Amino acid sequence: MLSLDTNLRNAMIATCVRALPEEGCGLLLGTSEGDDAFVVDVVASDNFAHSAKVYEVDPKVMLRTFRRADDEGLEVLGVFHSHTHSEAYPSPTDIRQAPDPAWHYVLVSFRELPTVVRSFHIQGETVREEDVLDRQI
Amino acid sequence: MSALLRIPTVLRPSMGGATTLQVEGDTIGDVLGQLSREYPAVKTQLLNDDGSLHRFLNVYINDDDVRYLGGLDAPVKSNDEITLLPAVAGGAA
Image (cartoon, rainbow over all chains, first blue to last red; front, side, top):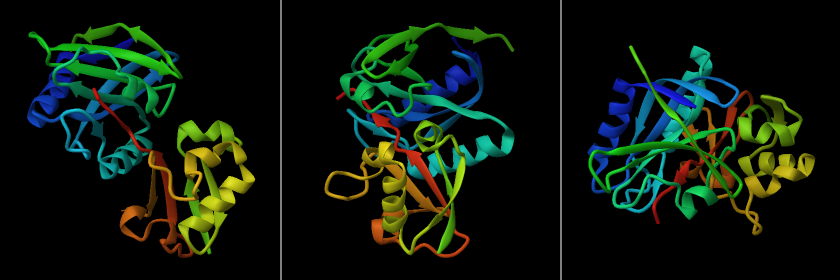
C-alpha cells in the first residue's frame, strides 16, 4: 500500500502537467514498513531524457534526494512518472529498467480525465498493483 | 588514492551488505574495475561487456557526475566521496 495525502498526489500531477508534452517524473520520499510506504514528500525532477515517450530522473536530483533522505532519516521509496497518451500501467520499458525491486512505481496517466494515478511493485518481469491510500491531513 | 564509496541499497546484497567501503584507485575506472573483481555479481551492473560505464548507473565524485569529468578516466583524489546510484528511467515507449 502506498499512502500519500491529497497535496502530495496533486504535486505529482502538477509536476507531470508542467512537463507536458514530455513525460514528467520525480522521486518519492518517506518511510516504509514492509510493503507499505508512507510518502512524506515528492521531489520533482526535470525529465533528463526530454521526451514524450521516455523519462529519466535528473542525476543531480537523484544525488540531492538520496543525500536528503540520509540527512532526514527518510528513504527514497520510489519514482513517479507520467504516460501522456497511454494507460497508468508499467510499459515494457518501465519493467525492463526498473532499478529496485523494493521500490514503488507510480504512474500518472493523462490518457483520460480525471487523471489516473496508480502504483505498482516491479520485481523482475512481475508487476503487482498496490492500493493508493488517500491519507487525510 | 583512497576514497569512500557509498553503495546504493539495490547493490548492497551483492557487496556484503555494506553501505560504504574504502576503495583504492587513481580513476573511477580503477575503482569500478576493483569492485568488479571483488564482487563479480555486480560487474554487469557497473560496466558494459566492452568495459564502458553502464548506461543505467550514475557515478558521482563528491557533487559531480563523472560523465562530465571524463567518465571512467575521471581522477579520484584522496578523501573523495564516490556515490553510486541507479539511473532511474523508463517511459511509455
